Length: 494
Ligand code: HEC
Ligand code: HEC
Ligand code: HEC
Ligand code: HEC
Image 1: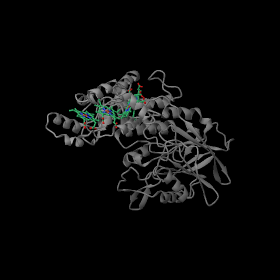
Image 2: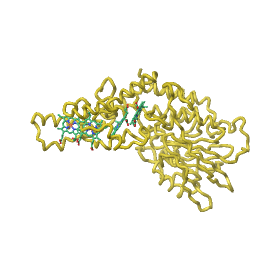
Image 3: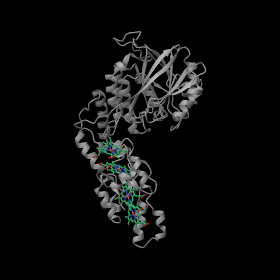
Image 4: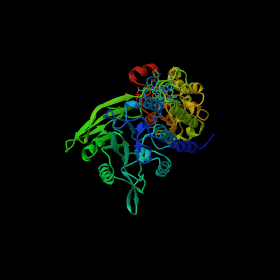
């Protein structure tokens, strides 16, 4: 059962690169593939360079399926890209592929690489600070074994001979018949403990150093991904570092924006800051035209990647790429057959005591207990078990990404671990909203036996503000349009 799934994925990943040829006739200098795809004529009939952008996948390889009409999913993206090859010229993705560095996200990262690299042939993979925080050696191993090169223009190794770009080169040139693109990427320091032997340069300095290093290259469009500091940092960089035609703000907005920020430059040209949104829910298509030595952004299109639920669970939904779907499914099978659920269970200490389970509240709060028992919250774990039966091959009740909102305190020591070990923490129990309540229970039990003074009750309040807790699970993705007043009526209790 506890197979090292990393190894297996890694192998398929390497094999996948044997078939490495680029989508839409694009070649990165590094993989040596031909620039021209058969049947594509040069010079192109349509001079407009149509670039597809996305980024900040944030571990959302596919939507959770909690609500209808969700967007995103690498399998839908793969379908869209393959089906609409005639409508764009090149697709590039920004980094922060993972949500945070942990064993689960590492597995997801590898599948992401397989999809973006070996299946969709993205020519370069910029990395954000979160990706880098997974561990440089591991990334370097990947980098050596695997086709699409990683990129971090601001991260350098300190050596005796001076600073050396982390992945050998601080830029990549992606060549397309319509444009030769110099790609840069700023990871930043946010959310990352930079190892001692590395140095992260300030964004502006990194761009200048990189443009200097790329002097001998031939390119006619400069694009820079910025992974930290939000829209403001991306805009500042576009203003301060002349020479960047497009700055892609990877963490700048959740929604893809069809309005760029335009920044006029001294030489009469314009730099554009673009916001492709996050979590793979959109692809942002930029139509660019080269006029008089510079690029004019004609139009931005926001392409929503719709996620349709299959009519029959476990079957291929319409608009889904079978190959990618298979990879995503294989990952879920491997995750839920491994011990990742338990491994991921105890990462942080809960604040305000430990979890005691829903049953522990019943004796003193009969009415609340009765109201809760009737609510959907009481059945939230059964929902996962039901889904497991439908899915057959993988088990949402063993997937950390599902369990986190369908149980109590998952991820915290003393919180949910598994169906077998912590049955009283299954479902959205009392403490999911009120917080870990051991101290509260201890106090009132003592008080009942007249062993504690009532004045001390203040210290034994349940630790969480229950009203606010809703939004940790009822996010816009899981509960579009969640309204507290309206929903609270359905589960009200005292
Ligand atoms: C031994 C009896 C007892 C148990 C067990 C108990 N409570 Fe209470 N709880 C009380 C009493 C008594 C109050 C009323 C406090 C007051 O009037 O100031 C209270 C108040 C509360 C309140 C409102 C004020 C506050 O402290 O935040 C919440 C919420 C609450 N309990 C949740 C829980 C939860 C959740 C559990 C189970 C983990 C639980 N209680 C278990 C006796 C108990
Ligand atoms: C961020 C929290 C969160 C995560 C993560 C999450 N869920 Fe949910 N889930 C919810 C919420 C909240 C609802 C209720 C939505 C509503 O009705 O507004 C829900 C509802 C559902 C429902 C519909 C229940 C019904 O019968 O109507 C299913 C099925 C479901 N989730 C399965 C899953 C699966 C499978 C996963 C993992 C892939 C998952 N959830 C991950 C929060 C989450
Ligand atoms: C989905 C979240 C949620 C769950 C689950 C939940 N509660 Fe509550 N609870 C609330 C909210 C919100 C309030 C109202 C708090 C407020 O008005 O600020 C509340 C109020 C209470 C109060 C009254 C507090 C007061 O100030 O009068 C008690 C007691 C209580 N809950 C106990 C429980 C018990 C026991 C359970 C489990 C059987 C439970 N709750 C489950 C969200 C929840
Ligand atoms: C720990 C995660 C979590 C928290 C916190 C949470 N919910 Fe839920 N909620 C869920 C899940 C999961 C479901 C779906 C349960 C199912 O059907 O499987 C759900 C379902 C519901 C439903 C039933 C769906 C519907 O609209 O009829 C209501 C109402 C609801 N939640 C209200 C609230 C309110 C109000 C709060 C805050 C006081 C809250 N929830 C806090 C996870 C959570």
